[in-house]
Image (cartoon, rainbow, N blue to C red; front, top):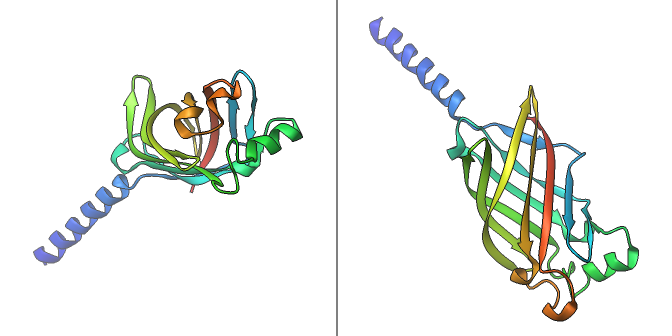
Length: 177
């Protein structure tokens, strides 16, 4: 009888440990916003998908794997959209996705940061993105802003007269799965 009680107690403890060590999965809500702005152009990407696993108490199991559909770019100008999707800039036919996959998430003061690989225009570079996480019940919002140098990714020509630095602003509301 002692063995059965001890085995049952061990099973309960392991179940409790497992339940608290699994990171929380989040579904991306439809009202997300991925904005970009530079000296010469600004706009949004309309299609954003991905997997967000985030638990502020267990960062080792947290991970972001997200993707932007390049063809969903919208600058508010049809000709500019066509040009941005073309071979001289994003080349949406050859490079249809911009992806980010985190390798590390850490606390940074009162906010967070994620380090990972940003792949754009066939070029992969490690970057660190600062972000905030504001939970409210079964919902939360991830938001942040950062800059990328478009020439680091071979987007556009250096002599094209466009700004090198492009600011990215991300607002991603989520719900718990």
